[in-house]
Length: 41
Image 1: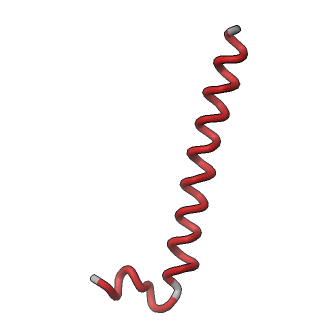
Image 2: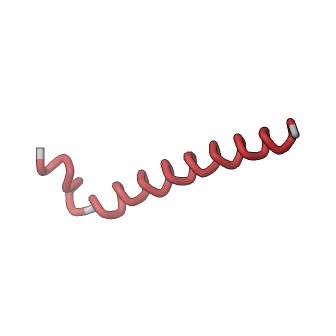
């Protein structure tokens, strides 16, 4: 299991990429909801 999370020495790059991607997707959802709320007002 530890070898899976180590990703052959590239764990920081791989997991960091996943983290940045999901953070940006979350930010996009928040901004879209905010824009929708402002458009209704």
